[in-house]
Image 1 (cartoon, rainbow, N blue to C red):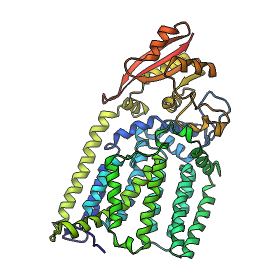
Image 2 (image 1 turned 135 degrees about the vertical axis):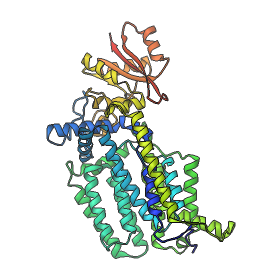
Image 3 (image 1 turned 120 degrees about the vertical axis):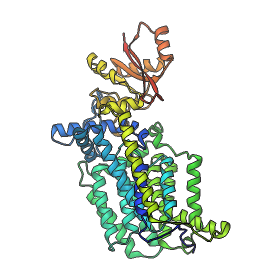
Image 4 (image 1 turned 180 degrees about the vertical axis):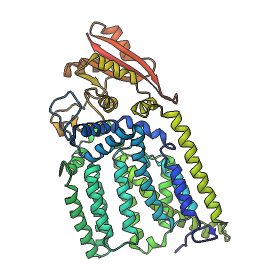
Length: 509
């Protein structure tokens, strides 16, 4: 077997863990990845709203859909998460929501690093840590429930491969299932698939007792996950959601992943690392299990892009060891460098201090640049959403406004009754019996405007279009001035100047 490729250090306790944690502090900081915060304008906005309203009412809101459509069915499969975000926003504003995301993100990173630290070269681990955010998955500071399920996955896999008491991994799985039932119920089928995979591997190795423990913990996890406000619906939600493939094709994260060159190279390097690992050739169970987990989430990512989150977390946890072996194989067979550079613990400590300083400085500079209100208005400024349009809408008192899919959750957060929001599922015939999705999520032409009017007789049409010329406005002014009028027209540019949107409100005559 190829030995661990390492850089010599003066002591076994060489400061590498401190360096890696400090690097994680910087690389996974919300201010390093501030561009992903703009996505809070979608799902997160309405999740905060539900949480705030739940706290105000004194009970969990499980059926409020914030839409003027009657009889919609909302599957609150993340009820605990809504309350958590609502409480964080109520106590600390948007900063509280960011802190919640940071806590789960850092805990996830900690368990990934702790798993790989003892078996991987620290600089290989550091390079992986730097590159993982470019894979487009983890971390994601839109602060959605996925940050909880990623944390649960990292903890479970860490315990599964760790040196713990025999049944600790099964207890951990059951506890995670209970937590996910409250915080991210829709992911439970995917989380259960991990345990099914582990049970299958135990069966392949003829460890039937362990296989039964896996299946038993799966049953126990299923049962405790039902101790949530909507019971079995947290399981059926995800299955029903995935079945509506034509609807989810509208949403980027539910489409197959198209890998960038960098992502493809990183994946290929990992596979080559497994290929040169003698433990794979010997069919050693621990290594085969890691390979199987990576393959499972890779296949899932090829079907649904959103599983890139899970794949990138497992990459952060598993890849450093295999890539370290790959570096060792290259050195043994190609470069043949015999003398390894020696780095003292002081160098690692210095690098750790530099990472901490960078984190502090970037946090201060970016917080003063992007955050002026400590509210959702800061997120609006990041993505060029028009804060002033909310006041105009409320002053007009619209009761049946049409809005596009991209703006629904933000409008609902601001107290505007919506046609549709980013959750999608309440507006699908598969859930509510009436379809408000297919052909009804946006308006880009006069014909589409007429179609929506014939379907819903809306009293206003709230639209966001690219800045500059609008063919729809031209059509209205040229062909339908007697049927429609533009009553609001404003162009907004994001705080960084990179994004501009034109905001329109069109009323029927």
